[in-house]
Image (cartoon, rainbow, N blue to C red; front, side):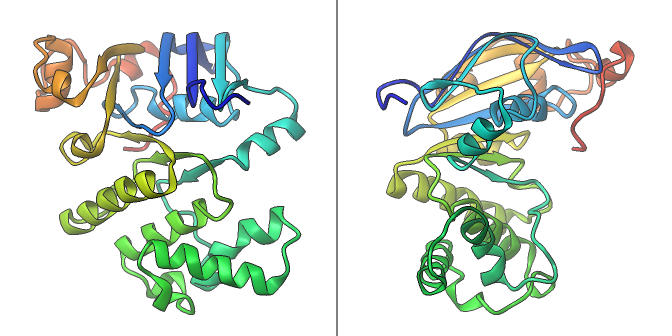
Length: 266
């Protein structure tokens, strides 16, 4: 892996689901140290793109490089790569029968041979980073939505991955909790030297912390640029998404009519 290469580089990628193309001609460069917002309406293919970046879905065409190396095909190599990618799941994915501390410790216990005392210290550090060190002994059912999201973030950071992917990090959160999560993402990205990709349809909450933004619609990337350039766009397709207009070049039921699988719940 070379440190001067982009964190993520996609070249003319096509991604299929159920024998049909969901995304085509995808070119994407994510510089190291940046925050990139991947925006688009529900069912546009954002989660399909996420699956490709983690190796869950192999491209039907084109090339994908992650952290300076081609995406591996063998399961063993993919497992090694995934240790370098932290993923904050849309539903948090916390195990309800484990305490907050044990949830965060799970990746460390599964993928390292570190002694228990050191794991405990690392867990305390990760929880401190998200402002929840005092919640270590609580259980997921005792947490608010915002707290649970921060615990999931601490777990995603447990193995110190250089690349973080956030899958709809604001789903189900109130405006205050959303602001806390976005501020935390920006702070951690800067302080830990991370590269972050935020997959979301929450435009106005995400753009203030993003360095670059892409918009996916109708099976392709329809915009790529800075947040300032996005706000100034005159593209009717992009404007429809930004404004939330029901009528326009993005049909509400376009995915269903095309017979494509709806891979995103919201």
